[in-house]
Image 1 (cartoon, rainbow, N blue to C red):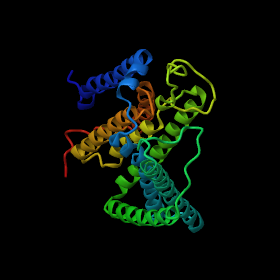
Image 2 (tube, helix red, strand yellow):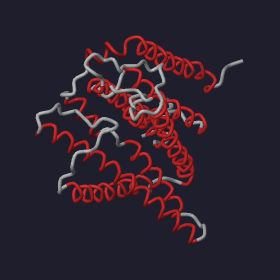
Image 3 (spheres, rainbow, N blue to C red):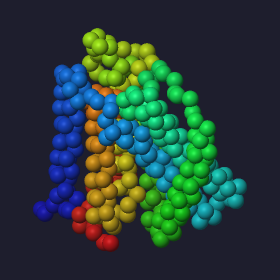
Length: 317
């Protein structure tokens, strides 16, 4: 009996899943044995590569939530539900979109101010505040810049989302509604898992090490709550949230979805490498942070019966 198209593809899909899991396990083993010498060898807080991604890579959770809220906004706008309920949903989705944009711009500006202060004080450009430290004093231009940039980005985002969603038929809008709800849940779940583990593990960052590295601990060692939050990497976890982007691409656009998937993987890898280079995290930190987002998104994609890499047979443009 001949295999169906989906049955024929199943072994390949599971093979990829096994490869990814194997890579994660291997990296965690390497981290347990060699985290310390790896970071001692490659850490450089003067790295512009590391500083660039540290300052401006935390964008995809906000982008995913912005897109998700606009899918819900557009869908409820076209529905026949009660006017009060419709207004409430539309209002809340708009508030979330603005808030997420505000928070993302705020973090980027704070990191930027930290880098500018480092240059002014002739300190390493990528040196950031320790987990227990306080932020530097904010300049007078901070708040006006935050407000103006947020407004501009929200307007651009709303316009782009409207242009994107206006062409979708009812079937695609229904699919996107499920994707939007699952994506928002995935962002929240990954964030909660990582932040809980950070508090529980209490691991010192590479740049927080004493001169003799006497406060170094393996990722296998749980320190408890002590204010230090190296394990897992939050930047890596948030970067790999970009893996949700392919789900917002129509399944009919197989090649476009695949290209979006490749972009997300490359971006996630670059951010993870940048955290190692800057000394903000160990290899095991970025591996676990990345894996948490990958796992959560994989589970969501399976629930939705969606393929992150797209179907190569669907190349309708």
